Length: 65
Image 1 (cartoon, rainbow, N blue to C red):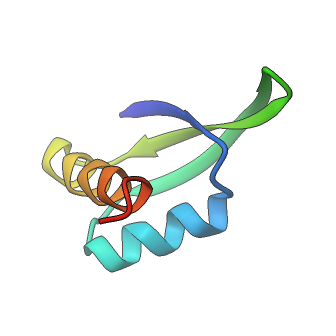
Image 2: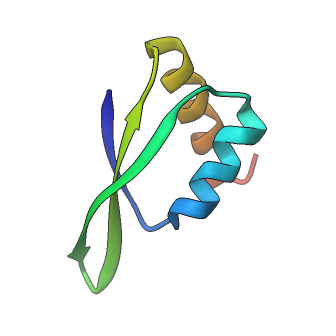
Image 3: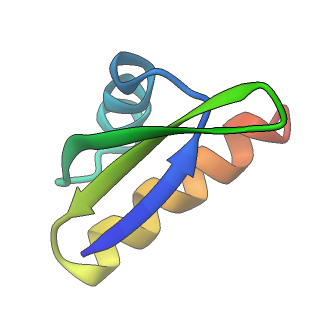
């Protein structure tokens, strides 16, 4: 289980997980603001290797890869 904060909408995160083939469950647990940017607080649940697969896809997507 991991909690991330990101400006990315939950629907886009779910699509990234699907494209990564990661068997994770994403749950929006709240929102917060930082420097006028709304951040979604998302709970990522699943086996550790699946969470890492999802996180790697997220890193690549945000870096333009």
